[in-house]
Amino acid sequence: MPTRSRPARRPNPAHFTLNSRGRVYGVFVSLEDVQECTSRLLDLGLRDQAVQLIMGDEGQQALDVEGHGLWGRFLRLMQGMTDERPHIEQYAHALGRGEIVLSVDLSGAPGSVAQVAQVFRESRAHFVNHYGPWVVESLNA
Image (cartoon, rainbow, N blue to C red; front, side, top):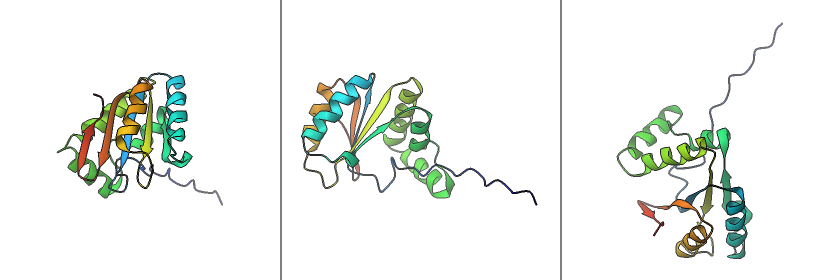
């Protein structure tokens, strides 16, 4: 009896969901800048698990721009009424250009948003934003 292949699973979005608040995201052009930033973030006392590298096709799937499933599509529709949806699209476009997105989970972390933002800026990141509960804060200035 021939075996049936299982359908491909939809990506389980880990980014820009209701459960992923308290994160800072930034875009980097070079891996060297990401490494510098990551090293400095770990020096602040952040755990390795708090710092996530998002790159390439796999990264674009993790961002899940369109949303999968009824809940995912509804969430992206709601985000379309805020700055968040265009931000997700901008991060996905950066990945498509070969840039790297770094995500830092600050929930329960000793580093403050201001400290992390400073590290991102000093490491030459652009399009740096903090996504907190009910707020999107640009950290580029």
